[in-house]
Structure formats: structure tokens, C-alpha cells
Image 1 (cartoon, rainbow, N blue to C red):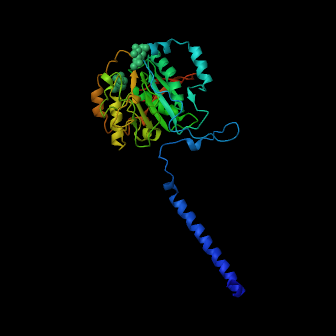
Image 2 (cartoon, helix red, strand yellow):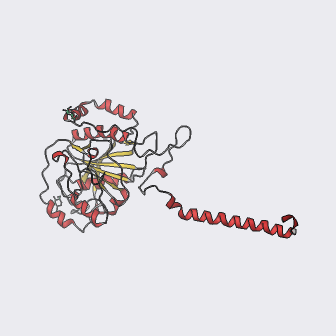
Image 3 (cartoon, rainbow, N blue to C red):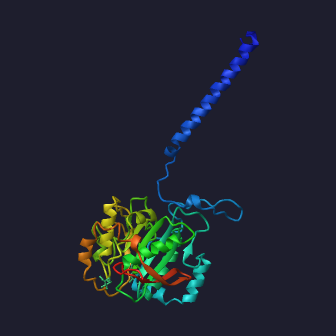
Length: 349
Ligand SMILES: *[C@@H]1O[C@H](CO)[C@@H](O)[C@H](O)[C@H]1NC(C)=O
Ligand SMILES: *[C@@H]1O[C@H](CO)[C@@H](O)[C@H](O)[C@H]1NC(C)=O
């Protein structure tokens, strides 16, 4: 047929085929681009995997860490004997071992074998808890490293002035984490006396809008009976963006208690949903052991402030935080910040 057609007809057929082919390719590329996000089924978790340029020695990029680390060992018997043997070990020996395991000054760690999904900053407020802190750091580093996490442990210590203010120390931890050159997508607000018993306990943030109450099954309560839904303290994971959205903690809680309930109100008022690991079925793998100590004296005015504090969250929190850094050290097992707090009821001098 073609051979018998006049040459101009043949040429126009070729051109038509080319045009149709070109149109088909263009349309399908548009379709792919339009639907690309839908083809990508990865959960929308705050992630740093893309901003890392980690390369190994051969110039090949390191693969993403698996969802479940192959290094997990499961449950640890955190008996009094275990804790005292952790405490008694020689400090220099521990530091050397941790350094050899890849821990960097300031208590920072990145796995060598893979890129982790998030960078997690663990903020630990303290005062007068030297032994608890020692056990915490020595236990937590190997625990977190088995999980192949990128993380830092930052300890914020309050000077002897004023009663303890946990919320304010957490806010300071947040501010200090922003000053690191690395970007941390996830904060874990961690009491120093709480130790996770099982390394299957997730130490990352769920997606934005869903802070996770991590400590709800603790030996402190009989038979690890889960605490109520409104409990939002001890150990909590919240994305950096969410923490900023709720303006952090209130600065108004001096002494023990109240600041966590206030934080819960902030979270709820901003329409965030508090989730728990393994929602609905408390398993042995999310239990916490509390290091023993005498209970602190509750702050006398805490109930008044909880009531009065509601609704005032825009003006009380990260925005009006005032403190003075007395000391800042990149210690072998943590970044340590010693601070003097300035109550927000005092004008800056
Ligand atoms: C944990 O260790 C303590 C002391 O070593 C021991 O008495 C206890 O039975 C252990 N618990 C379990 C569940 O193995
Ligand atoms: C400000 O807060 C501090 C810390 O609790 C308290 O001691 C002081 O009395 C307060 N001052 C005023 C003027 O309320």
C-alpha cells in the first residue's frame, strides 16, 4: 500500500505517527507526575532520610534502616541487682566502650550501617539525680543503638534557684536542640528515672498531629496497670513541629506535678490526637521500670494553675521562656546544660 502511495502521503503518515507518539508520551508523563504522590505508599512520618548525604567508603549511599532493627535483644531484667551493677561500673571504662561503639561527644549517635528514618532528641530534665542519671545514660545508649537510631541525649539541669520546673526545662531542651547543626524531627520528653524494659518499644515519633504517650504501663503502678487516658507525662514522644504548635509546656508550674496535665490540655485544644504504642493492647514490650526514690513534695498551687492555665497557652510557653545558661558541655554521654530559670512573673533585667 505504502509503496503505491504518493511520496507526500507517506511523509505525512510518518509525521502523524510521530505526533501521536509524542502526544501519548506527554500525556502519560503528566499522568504519572499528577499521581506520583499516590503511588508512593510510605507513611507521612517526619523524616530526615532525605536530607542526609551519608556515604560509605566506596561512595555508595547507605541503605535506609529497616523498620525493625536486626540488633534487638528483647526484654532486660531491670532488677535492683542489674541497676546497681550498671551504677558501679567504672566511668572511664564505660566511656571508652561507648566511644568505641560510635558514640560522639555530647551523647550523639548515627548508625554506620544504615540511615535512620528520623533524628530523635531525647530531652531529660534533672536536678539532684546523679545516680539516676548515670544509670539512665549507661542503659539508654546501648538500648537506642540496638534500635539503629540517630539520636542525641540532652540533659537540662536546673540550678538550685526556685522549685523544680519540669516544663520549663523541657522548653529549654527544645530551644537548645534547635541550635544543633543537625535537624531533629522528633522529641522524646523523658524523665530520668524511667527505663524502658524492652527494646521493641518504639522510640520514634508517629506522624505529625499524633504525639505518643510512651509511659503508661509502669512497675510503679501495681502489676503495670495502665494509667488513664489523660495521663501525658513521664515519657512522651512529640514531633518538633507539634511541640512548636502547642507553644511547648507552660512555664508556670513550680514544684512537682501539673505541667503534664496542662500539656495534655494544650495538645487536645490544638486537635492533636494522643496515641499509645500498640494501642488497645498493653504488652510487656512497652513497659517501664522506675528507678526507686522518695516521692517529691507536690507543688502546693498545682491544681489552681492547671485550671488557670487553660486557654492561656499562646502567651505562656516557648514564646515567653527566659533562662540563663550557666554551663554548657558536650560530655561523653550527653549534652549537658545547666540553667538558671527566670520566672515569667519577673520582668527581665
Ligand atoms: C530478675 O532478676 C532478679 C535478680 O537477679 C531475679 O530475682 C528475678 O527472678 C528476675 N526476674 C525474672 C522475671 O527473670
Ligand atoms: C514568681 O514566681 C516565683 C516562683 O514560684 C515565686 O517564688 C514568686 O513569688 C512569684 N512572684 C510574683 C510576684 O508572683
